[in-house]
Image 1 (tube, rainbow, N blue to C red):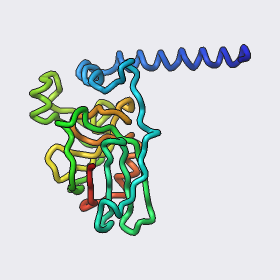
Image 2 (cartoon, rainbow, N blue to C red):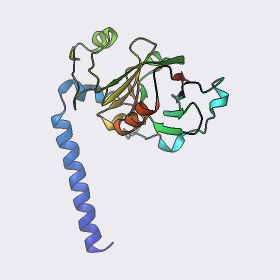
Image 3 (spheres, rainbow, N blue to C red):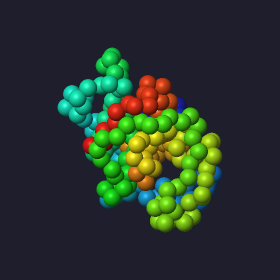
Length: 199
């Protein structure tokens, strides 16, 4: 390694560490406490799930692609989308619920789409952690990110997240989370009535 490479590595390491420290200091206490619930392996190192995507076919899970279809694989932690005419296919990494009791599986559909959503914790979330705020408006602290696709199941959504550490992990209270840039694309591709299946 040349002296230049060593200097570049040191700067990169320094900047990355500084950004992480500043980010943690800027986050409100309730957000910091919640982030500690994200899964980790025995060494405390979180494993991303990008490399374990499974190749899935819509034909194995849906009778048709009317209104487009979304297949969420909670094991591989990924979301598959096929357009109604099957010319568009998207695959995104996701966050999934922290535990099996928070995970809902089965068929549902998108019933509402919201840009820059507001957020309130569910009664069950407040019961588990009274420190959660009662309401968060649109913006950089909103847990739903920049877009939300509301499902026919009460309190369940596919949404963005401001906390990119959650993607590829068991880190949600029941919803499926995507990077903001991914949910913004998916938001434009889907419509009310898009079929959704969680497996």
